Length: 230
Length: 254
Image 1 (cartoon, rainbow over the protein chains, first blue to last red):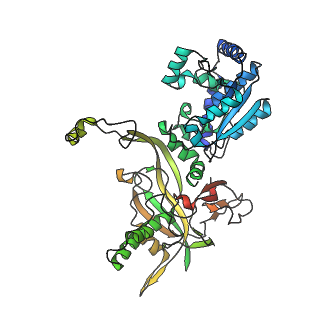
Image 2: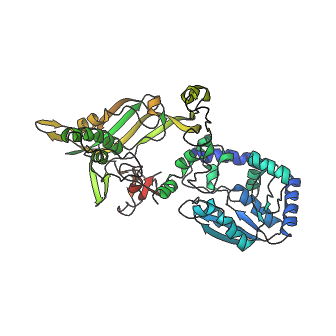
């Protein structure tokens, strides 16, 4: 269920409808879902832990699988001060929390704190040093190698969606009618592939590859200007 | 005497990026002349003064005073430091859209002789000034770009010039619109300036209600009832539109 926004153009929404129709026809393997829920149940029984969320597609699927597994644990959204947050993440959060009950927390950090890892230490002190994230192996070669060598659980980081392919993530979102961040439909009428679109911080110096800076200039110009005007 | 005008740029090549605002184009052209005049009047001149007169070369420098450049487009003073031109945002229809790429990678084979004195060096393609780039460019095939504005004429000595004449004189200096004009994109084939029957510079009439035609400051303007086609945003309402000092809460067309 895409959350529509004034950022979307007519061509974007038309393309999204086609993609969503295709997502509805993709069968997510039952074995994949059952293996993931079993892994979640086994991991969460191992002591203090929390789930990190960015309200992107993977986070939403992961949180839904936690709920379906009957596991309740703190869910933490780490936010950046100084207008760097994607302003549309709050829309996903509000819809998800209105449908599902979560032990939800938000913590704010300055971008400088994130550069030297202070934010991780602060979160660990409060919620424990074992965290679940929405990383997947087909996002990058490093992640694929990490998950292939270390498995879904490294001891500190748990990647329940590690073996999920991108098509299954979008199919799960469509079939479960979960809220989808508006950014995934900011497709430039087909110029921007949705697998490359991200929902987290805006205007970051790191992670500008695949034309991310140009995409932000096209769809989030006012957010970039707020950062510049600081 | 101010006259509502319709300005059309007929394009001979696809457009990269977004077309600029008409007042920004005029200010840029006039600033080039102003620097030249200042240099002539003050001899070698003060480079800082030239910089102040010309368009700002960098974001970290102060923006020039709003409305300092004399342009043939009318302006409305909304507050001490906010002066908005009476011209619409650029209007255009995209016939076809595609992605081109701007690529740059230093070929180590060619720069070898340059390093003969310093010995073998490592060229970093992943970072620093030698970082390779492959940036996507949004290219749109656009037949024409249209602005609606209200312009005034001029009189200097015995020469009287009409609003159309004044605007034509400024715009003939503009050979290309958008980005990468040096590569031939956005080439203007012809400028057309013609009288228009109404002032559509800020708002245009429609059956559903007035339509917003340009970015306006949110807090300094009382928006008409039933206003259509707008969203709240953050940006500039006067040139240079890219300068952070100009940014404020605005309403812009969408």
